[in-house]
Image (cartoon, rainbow, N blue to C red; front, side, top):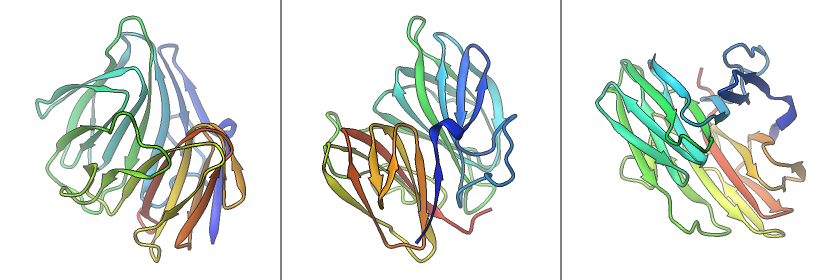
Length: 239
């Protein structure tokens, strides 16, 4: 087993007043040549946006972009004609493909919105741009992984153009769980602690810490408090 640890306090940061962002990998003005990506996982930004503020229309190509609101609501518009509000408890994916323009704004004029913005490198370029959104089960099940992203449009969760799976768990204090990799011979899994604290293969992780693991079939976790965890399984050979 090989692993890397990303502590919350060591992430890159940006503060524009209306936006506070923490970068798990090199992004924008934060550049670390030793921390560009984890396999096909290229970006994991932990964003906080002031009321009524947001990202004006801008473009992307050849990237799978997943947004997961953690609190508040996010208003989306894009050049495919899609307009939607993504709420806490939803998951959104946008396949940029041949090119797409979009904007993301806080839908509230009184409350901030916090969300994760995640970029996955696709397995093929030039796909048709697309948008998909779903609402996760409410109340969220306890102590079992719930798949929220997959490479198969007929499987649970939104789908991406990559052999990648995202799963989330709300795990109770003291409960041990396992994560079994779908393709252990070629994949790794990146665990991001949204809230709480736990041990992953004996490594202590606290709020917003992360651990990437590869060359392993199963990973053992144990919650040290009530916790929310996101697992991102991706091919390790992508670039």
